[in-house]
Amino acid sequence: MITLRIYLRANRKNAAGQSVIYFIVGEEWISSTIKVSADFWDAATSSITKKHPKYYTVNPTLQLFKSRAEQCISNLQTAGKPFNRSYFEAHVFEGADTADNPCFLNLIDEYANMMNVGWGRCKQFKGLKKDIQQILPNARIHDINFDFSLKLQKYLRTKKDNPNNENTISHKLRAIKAVVHFAQKKGILDKDPLAMIKVRDIKGDKNHLKPGELENLENLFKEETLTTVHQQILKYFLFSCYTGLRYSDVVALKYYEIQNNCVVTTQEKTDKPVVVPLISKAKALLTQSSTGSCFKTHSNQVTNRYLKTIVKKAGIEKKITYHCSRHTFGTLSIFWGIPLEVVAELMGIDFKTVKIYAKIVDEVKQREMLKWETKVG
Image (cartoon, rainbow, N blue to C red):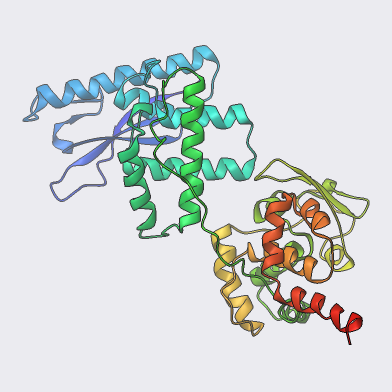
């Protein structure tokens, strides 16, 4: 049973003494953006009193929202579907979806469900929806066009709390284009409104740890002089250095996926199965005969923030993020002579991608050229 209440949050006022009217659906508080003074609010009828100077324009809008909300909840309950905040907001405040111009956020959810994306992708789509709402709060599919993409890119580059780099922006644009193509297949769009937007990844340095730097972190972990949180983070960071698993894969890793001294799992990002034999150092980081999650993990943001402190304590002067562990695995695997084809299989990537790691290992080139010394002279 989905409950609905309309409530004036009178304890929070703006400079003009006005408060926001909220729709409370179950435990969700959803702002209607309508603001009134408590002097003009009738809590018994959830309506604005006739004393309000703009009663005949403001109250009808509120009652329209109320009617739509009741209809929306009725539709969800009849269909046996759980409450969906994005659908509710689009249905109530922008009007019900139409077949030829549905809510774009709902299309994202539909696409994600159809593709049965993993935890990592779901989290990415959730973040993308928040970004879109900053540009266009109730975007419909026909609002997604060339101008919208330019505004979104500008917003992502200049976000005050966490500006996105060019590769992250490319990934988000690629996700939007995938949903647009999904709308085309559904017959909602005749042509791709983002056809002029070319998405390209920027090839940058894949920062990695050298053998000596990895050893410094190993020694720091053995000393057990770090705080509990730092020790936890270093523990699963080292595990990724030994296995090449992404952050999302380590967060989701369960003990039942440790089989015959191997990690046997499906990558959250790509849905590709991988089997990675565990070296003794990796096995030492796992608790024997345990169930549930393999590691006590923290959010990606917290992990990356604390890693800065950890690497400094290890005497490493590099800008390190968690993904550096995966680059370290790929780079050192090649450096120590594991064939590219095998590294590609271990990391769940194609041969073209793994060759990027080979290009950045200058030490490998120098080592291989030394073979000429044994052949020549």
